[in-house]
Figure 1 (cartoon, one colour):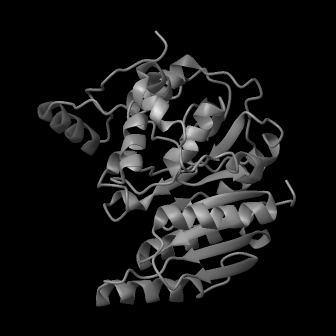
Figure 2: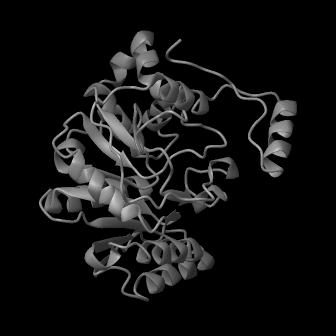
Length: 322
């Protein structure tokens, strides 16, 4: 790392309340007073309504409202770039300048220990070139359980996370944004199945991105992990909660199942140095990221069970390791 602390990059658009929650939580981080924060404000679309224009102005007022970190640099776009292009360009600009970066969007509430965890992880894995990214988010224990005898505070994942993450310049610059391998993958089901080890929705997302049905950036980063035999490091307990699961997110539907009501505050992190795939965790992660349809009656029972504070009764079990 070129600096003692990685810069934070936040992407915002037209959600004033969410942006305010994100910034207030970030400000409570112990390292906020020592960190540089870049805020990229996307611009309005050509046909933006008066309400949207009002919200965009409100967001821009909020980001300048307080000294959220030691230094705050605001970049305002005149026209709409969209989330995918904003992140691609903004991350590239800052990561080329600083060598590493912590990335957030405008609907993420973080633990006060989030920046500590991210900076320690970036430093710990900087020279482990098979680690392409650090994730701050993990699935709630109600839908994915970590084995009680697992001895580390992080685990190896075959899939990068996009809800609060970090990376380094040399890894980020290996992304093939055009995905030149896609025609080969289309013809080879073995490669598709291998790519889907991170969840059987991954190749489908790539297909939708390539056809223009889905405007995302993260699937190309996932592809970079795959073709370089790289991994992501994920905390066993999440440092991030996603408020955008209320349906306001660009690529998120209403899904409270993935919300984290309690966030990790641990700063004394036990990192894993032998980067192995714990088959129990890999299987649990894969099962959760499985788009097989569950019958309606099972969905209803699961929802009732969650409402009384219990986990899902019916879980679709899918495994990579038998």
